Amino acid sequence: MTRIPHETSGEPNPLQALTLDRLRQRTSMKWRTYPEDVLPLWVAEMDVPLADAVVRAVTDALHLGDTGYPAGTAYAEALAAFAGKRWGWGGLAVERTAIVPDVMLGVVEMIKLVTGPGDTVVVNSPVYPPFYMFLEHMDRRVAEAPLGADGRLDLGVLEETFRQAVADGRRAAHLLCSPHNPTGTVHTAEELSAVAGLAERYGVRVVADEIHAPLVLGDAPFVPYLSVPGAERGLSLMSASKGWNLPGLKAALAIAGPGAAADLERMPEEVGHGPSHVAVIAHTAALRDGVTWLDALLTGLEGNRRLLADLLAEHLPAIRYQPGDATYLAWLDCRALDLGDDPAEVFLERGRVALSSGLPFGTGGTGHVRLNLGTSQEVLTEGVRRMAAALR
Ligand SMILES: Cc1ncc(COP(=O)(O)O)c(C=O)c1O
Image (cartoon, rainbow, N blue to C red; front, top):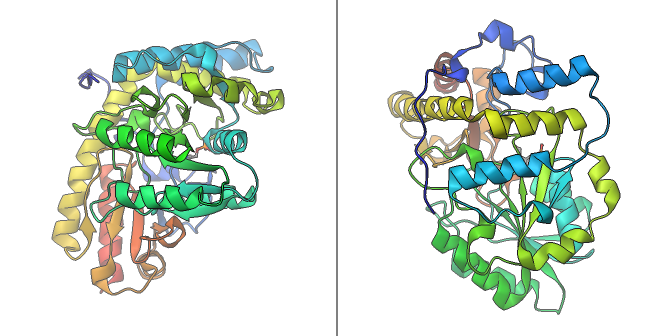
């Protein structure tokens, strides 16, 4: 799989475009959950203005009154072209895709296609907390196959968890987070092939949440799960939501491997009524015309990862931070600080900085926090200053 290097263009770093005063005018979850004196570095929203291509497409739609129901395959076509150019993956077949309301509701629908109530879904903890919430809400049993100490998939543990999941003859699925939230781990082609091999051996169906795929920062290439040999019966969810900061414009795509096409066809038609047409327009424009913006963002995020590592080394050397190659999230091991199970609470109360608690991320989350790097260098610096001040 070839990786096309980020182009350097005249596009300014979108992370440096907005002042804190301007950001505080936002009314979304990141900005309205805590009081004004708290610096929010938690939920996965980025402090960026939107790509011009997205603003233009949405504004044109609004001027035209193009606010009806979604139709056609433009989103899937834009994603297929992006996947081909970005990841060298020519296997995204538009006819094996369906629009879904967002990634998590897409995950729910894919899991429903391949398992029933009471069946097990395997997750790799620590992992994005809604995985637990949504799966439990749909009466699936969640089984954890924790990541190894290196933050990578532990294939031995995964195999044993698969074996137990199907031991009583029930169906099972593996909800794979790729790249992984919160560690930023980019799974390699070898790891993903091994997952596919195990899944086939045990009859476990893989559903890959690949929402963070456009946000691969380092030298590790993103490998689409459905591109690896043996993954033909897999299902994937992709979206422009994280890469271009569009969670308020809800839409996503479900993609089936050739061996899962019949499953996807069983998805009820009404699921496709959920995504917003304007969101589909926004996501399509992002993937088609927002790549220069994305590259400028990734360059900015690379700088922020280096800055965070430097700031922690200087002010909070006891925190362990192994930067991942993807996402704008940093997973911080604070156990050496002796702040108890939930250091986020201490940083919030004493430092007035909001981070995500590691606890709801499942096994491996105790004593950890997740910090959102998708902000300016000034805000990031102030965030670490507040964390350090909380310890004085
Ligand atoms: C791994 C993962 N999946 C899904 C989502 C949510 O996506 P959506 O808003 O499209 O449901 C997020 C949001 O941060 C995420 O990190």
